[in-house]
Length: 393
Image (tube, rainbow, N blue to C red):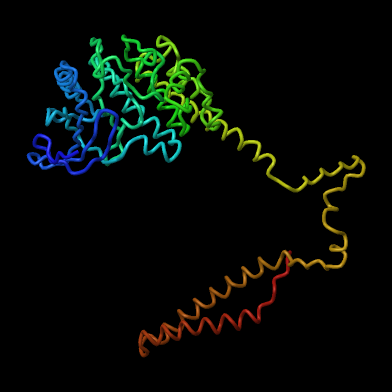
């Protein structure tokens, strides 16, 4: 490839190559942004009507305008090459992710939701992808999935493909009717391919593999659908039903739309979450019962009625014999004490009154208060000591 410029787009580097096209990273000098330029092989121009049909399909794809379809910015011809200008996807492809192993269930659901919605939009507009595979599902820098490479798609009313009578597609993802060369393919052929991709995302493996592309295609036609839970036993049980219906040999037995496939898959995951929560609750309950590791203490054997001890025997008898009982105060003492304190108070008040009357003319008020305060204290102590207890009547 000697081209350094296609139209107004400056080619920077090759980033992908397929059987019919090469993809370049390029720069758009008008909008000052990087784009992806897909150059179709010159051999495709051997058919006189191909250029007109290519332009028609490019216009149709550009008009899809779906949030999960790689947008087409421009198309044209340069030095015998037809080209498409698209958004540059910086997050790699689904094929790169699957190569690292099975995807988490939540990621699978998110990808199915976006790609399924994009497929249904294209099908509604009469466009069948015909080459749906992980390499054509790309991610932006935020991790959102996009459906791209409609370059070999055709309108459903067309009876001629871009490559004449050749079978278009990738053997590992082709539907049985596509392998048979059915000229009346409809949206359910893409549903089959989406089911194969779902199988691969969940297991990290393709459902059918063999030594040659022709053998792989024969297995798609003849072999039963592999049991996905034999490859990944920890998958929810009903996931197998989603794969079985989406990859049914007969188109009439498949999901009618990609949205139906996606909704069913989401329902399976929600059901699995509810079942898991219930099982977790069931497991916890018996654990609480069997938690103690020591043997339970045996219940005491009830004594016969005539041998049942009385309440007074609850305290050992030696305590009552060896500890002398504390003598109680005489009941007459408390009234005597109360009467004594009352008498002292009366005497003290009387003494203060007499003293104040005698000293009214000479001492200061402060001195009288101090002496009056001290005198009752002395009198109270003396009289308390001389008091004779009052005997009870």
